[in-house]
Image 1 (cartoon, rainbow, N blue to C red):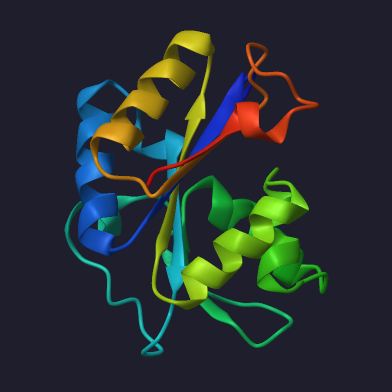
Image 2: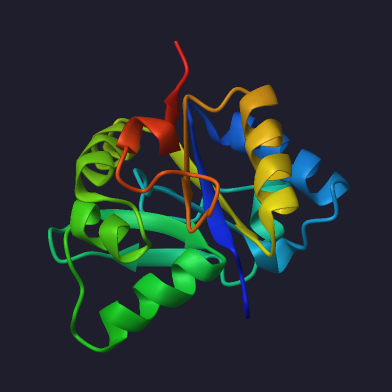
Length: 165
């Protein structure tokens, strides 16, 4: 997304929870092109239905470590481009390319391998970042992480990351 202020990521325990968040984000005027998701492809097919299936670029992607993912949106564009150019990486390394710091990427990768779904919203301004964080919090995101937000102290990872209890 041109001129985005940042990206808000939320980790959900299920595709149903991520789909609920997607519905709320679209109700808050996020376009489907602003929303991405990534999940483990445990069965070798894009077994995704409902609203998640409507996101742009839905498909599967194989990473260098053999992990297969179902991915859509801008995450698909970025990671798909790497795969096509022969620069595919492991899941944690791929997450760092999306802007997630390595210490968070390791955690997210382990959760995704266990069946969690990573949802993201590209945001144009700090108001959209706040809205996305509220939606992800209210729809049960286990972990929320934001990049590129000027209101965060980038030297303090605890100021940027919220793990729900």
